[in-house]
Length: 423
Ligand code: ATP
Ligand code: MG
Image (cartoon, rainbow, N blue to C red; front, side, top):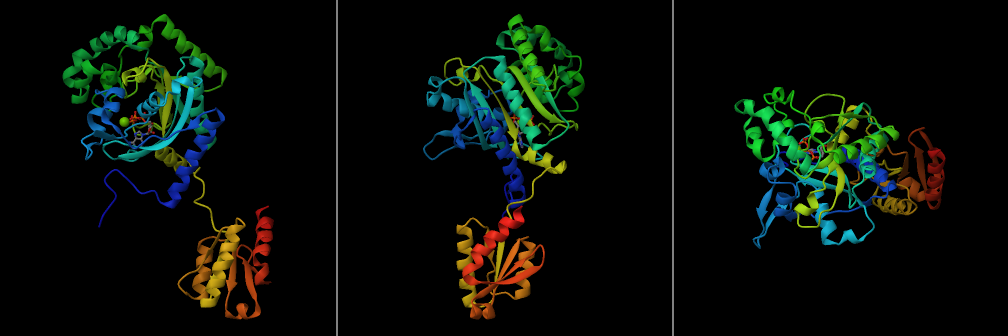
C-alpha cells in the first residue's frame, strides 16, 4: 500500500472547502487594496534561496528539497515565495511599473521539517508583497491586510506581535551587545544556537527549545540600538496602526527566521500558547533584491499558512460547510429511464442547477437513500410507469412533497421551485 509521503497530506473535499474559503477570503481582501495575483514555478534555481533567504537559515541549512535535474541544473523545490516573487520582479522589469508593485499569491512551499500538527513538509501559503517603496504607511497597509483577513474570517482572540529589527547598520551596533549577553551561556545552548552565535546571532532570540528559552530572558532589546531614523520609521508605523485601530503588541525580541528581514517584523498568533501556532508572519526585506543580484529595492510582505488558518477556523467552529450540494438528484429505474435521466441532468446543468443521477441500476430505495445522503433539495423520479405516461415525479426532499410533472416541463418546474425555496 502506498501512502502520502511523510509530512504531506491529501486534501479531501471537506477540508478543501475550508482551505478554499481561507484563500478566497484573503484574495478578496488583498484585491480590494489593489494587490494582483501572481504564481511562480514550484522549482527554482537553488541559489536563489541560498542567496535570498540566507545560508545561515533553517530553510537553507536543513529544510530545502534539493536535486540536480537531468541537465545538471541544481534546483530546489520552492521553500518560500518571497525570494521567488522578487526574482519575478527583476526578471520582468516590474521596477518600470508604478511603485509599489503589489502582488499576492497562494502556492505550496516545501520544507523538510519534522512533521507535527500544523507543521508539514508541503504547506500552502497565501502571501502578499509590496515592492519598490520604503514608507511606513505601506508597512501599515500590509500589517492591516493581515489583520483584516483574520477578522474577515471571523477568527477571534488573535494577537498581533510587532517589532523593528532595524537595518544592517543598527544591527552592527546591537549584535555585539547581544553576543555579550549569550557568550557566558554558550556551553548550555543547543547546537543550532552555538552555530548561529557568529553567523546569525539574532536567531538566538528565536530558538524554540525549552533549554535555550531561559537564556533569552534579559537579553538586550534592539530598540535601544536603533538609529534615530530607524526609530522614527518604526514610530511612524505604530502611529498609523493606532489610527487604524489595529491592536498590536510590541514584542521587543521578535525576530524572523529568514536573513532578509529589516525594520518591521510582525506575526499574528492565537491567544493560546505554543510554538506551532503562528498563523501569519512577515516583515520588511529591503536587502533581499540586492542579495539576489538586483539594485537595492525595498519591499514588505507576509506569508500566511493556509492549513494553520483552516485548523484554527475548525477549532473555533467557524469553518464553512463542505462543497456545494446538488440541487437535484435524479432517481431512474430501467435503461430507458437512465438515458432520459441523463438528458434531464444535462438540461438542468445548462440552466445552472446542480444535478446528479443514480448509476448502476440500483433499487428505488437505495437511490432515494443516496439522494438524502447527498442532501439534494429535490429528487426527480423517472420509472417505467412515468415514462409510459410522459411524466416524472418531483419530490421536495426537505418537505416530503411530491407531484407529477410532464417530462417536457421538468426543467422549468425545477427552476421555479429552486428559486422559490432559495428565498
Ligand atoms: P515557524 O517559526 O512556525 O517555522 P516560519 O518562520 O518558518 O514559521 P514563515 O516562513 O514566515 O514561517 O511562514 C509563514 C507562515 O506559513 C507561518 O506563520 C505558518 O502559518 C506557515 N508555515 C510555515 N511553515 C509551515 C509548515 N511547515 N507547515 C505548515 N505551515 C507552515
Ligand atoms: Mg520554519
